[in-house]
Length: 195
Image 1: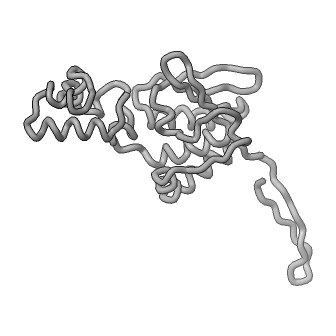
Image 2: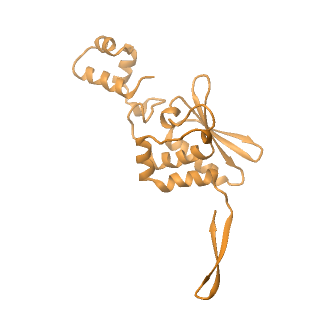
Image 3: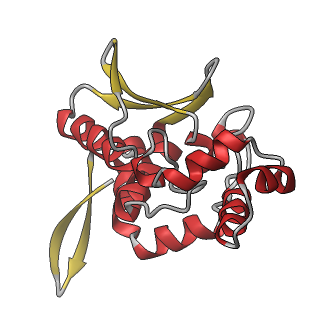
């Protein structure tokens, strides 16, 4: 897997008129890979990555999915790919549907799995490029290490704070109403608000 910088450099050399062999020698990338880059539109390639291939990403869906990942998401390595699992409560089927939809919008054409467990399900996506989209992945538990958003993630979250918060609240939020009383203008009033 090559970075977007290497791919851009190779394609620029091709546009200057260099041969496939010359570009392969200059970049260290196989001729067949350079030919595929030249002949295949990244969006149409299976496994195309928004980060590596500099493709547009559904920012609203990504913001919500980032919230779900930071809440109840788990990213791990399998033999040939990474898998993202987001645990959802069976009592809230619309949230499960939301997570399935978000994964489909981030990885169009990707197979999404539902893994049933007692009282919950894991919504799972397998893909080699998950660490490109979730660079916060690392050893150990998320709550025991520092989580810092990269600049491009901060831009997305700033542009779409509602979906990001929706992902956080639906994954880790408590669905209980708190209440409080307060005397206003001599009258005792009760206020209810979601926790």
